[in-house]
Length: 207
Length: 279
Image 1 (tube, rainbow over the protein chains, first blue to last red):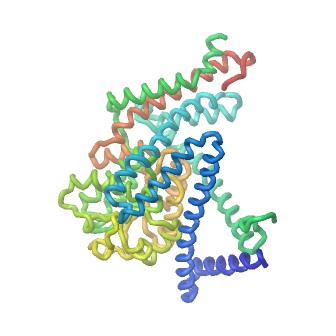
Image 2 (cartoon, one colour):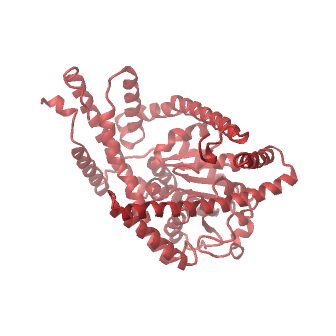
């Protein structure tokens, strides 16, 4: 019963959501609206659980002085600072909160993203070697797109943007569409497995 | 070790140093290379141009600070284009920086249009939790989905624009700014498909390949891809900004990467069989 109960609840709830998606059965629409509210509340609780878990892990790391424990102190201080400060202001738009956010999270987030340019440059140099015919095709396509997507490409040859456009619109789109359809079909089958109780990994424990 | 063997094993610190020098020089002393407009960017621009004055446009700010250099210039350009046409905007999103991103754009654009007022021509509802469920809620009842307040904690009922925006059924267009998930796929599934609201996307360059199929299928009516797309949009609204300035840096950075790829491959070809080590 420990697992059958959640599976039964999941099946009924899933069925309601599917029916409402395809047919506007009025009584079920109201139930779906209520379920959406529950989902939002559960999501908020999931954040709280994640927060507690994160704090526990890093507190243990600090306690046992494991490698990188200094970073854990920074993380705990950051969480505590934002939490305490956040609770004292009226909204996320509060100027003080904005200032704190804009002077910490924003530059750190931007920095993390912008250093990718260095890794990409280094990785491209090391990875793009014409070892096989396929690698040669990949390299040629990459160079055309890299040049065709920047202004200097047009100066080198007016054909480069056209070739870039063709690569993006024909082989790229065909490949992406195949991946998307394949992934979606996989998602549907996985959802069905969860719905009818074949897949029970999310309930925890060993299947 | 010979020259061509060394060419295969250039120290990453040399690559990093040359990259930073290239970017810095191009940013400090831009050449000002001409920018032509891509078909997908033009489609997005034209779609906004066709909207009647007074239309409400949703600006989906579903990105974080990492996407700012590529997406903020487009967001600002769309607002400039829209305010010229007397469109009205409601901005918000499912990413926790949504409110901040909208705030950055409004703060930059509003001084260019002193007549445009917060609450009348623009509202920032900020970040709202819920992902797909939020979008579904917004289709039926946006005020409940937004829990009744904007990014600054002001009640939505006190903002005149929000009295005309009760749900996504009241909007004429969605312009989304995306760096990942939730993103354009969610808007297509939960809003564009069911309601038939046209959607245009501005995404970071790495997301362009996976977004292209939606342009071809007509589920997106336009696509502004990466910093290049943002620069093109700045060209279209005739207000050159940071994206235009960044294009030179991007162009020379690409050239540098290609130069290293060529050097590495020449080294590989000339030393084939002698040294296979590339790391």
